[in-house]
Image 1 (tube, rainbow, N blue to C red):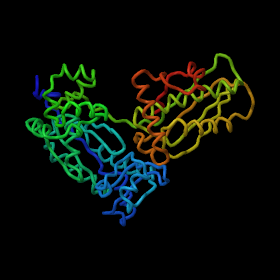
Image 2: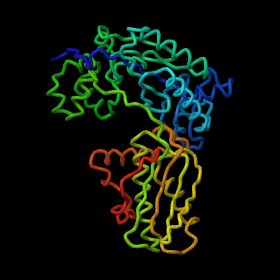
Image 3: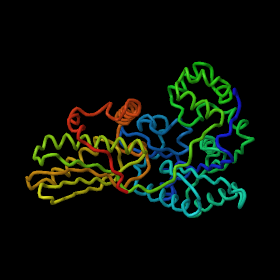
Image 4: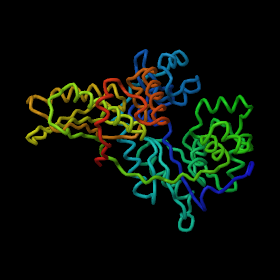
Length: 401
């Protein structure tokens, strides 16, 4: 099996579309003076973080998630733009709508990435021609640069897109997969974490070819199931299906008390647990919310809600502050309460990078570490002390699309 390419799925044809330096490109549409200049998008304070940067800035060593202060030391003449998530969201939805009009099956992987399954298209139209025309349509209707990779599965297509950038296209058919992948650095493998990269480099493994030649049994001993997944990707194997896109409207949870209560302390504990659970699910799904709603049902079944529009986020501490504010404004009758609930709506793909507009590197890294523990040991592995009692009572989440 060493060094052998196995077919990921019979006759699959997968497209990966990626909007190049998406935030920067949108800002340049609004302000042409930014074209050709080193641009940084993100928090504008000394403790801010780079959410996105132009290719001109990258030449100086700047990268996303870097502290803004460090980025400006590397590229002192860079132009810093605060960013407008609402605008980015609108452009992203426009691109998604264009794809939805033409694609038989597609997945929205993030605010600026899409996968499309066009298996069988060659019998009617030609996969490369179809994808090229789709790309041209997106550019014509939005003015945004976009690259694509076309190949046999998600992994190879995504790597191909990376090699096609900026604003390019690359087709890697089944026979070309091995010659295409093997000379590349193992850094090109999607989802290869820094620790895995460092371990492999310490073993003298730098290219995908060398990694592909390691016996899979050894990779499993070194890294467990993750080692097998990395080995498969190095060999161009990826069975991951396209997950059909649907627009989730909101995510919420609520609890009905066994006995109507006015125990405010207890209700605050439950609200904390609800927010932690919902915010973790947002980050797990690579989504953010721009609207928070709190619900109260009194013992006489009168139901009241209050909502607030906020800047896009998925961070607990920000959402907790809003939820508590809304609950305090909403609970004015001092009657027994039967039910409380929290809902996040106006959802958008974005992952933690979009939170970098406001938050410090420390808070971003903290949430990444907490989520890693939850993903490994379960959602209840880490929580705020105040939410420990409330957590027991929080029911399953509701997709309120």
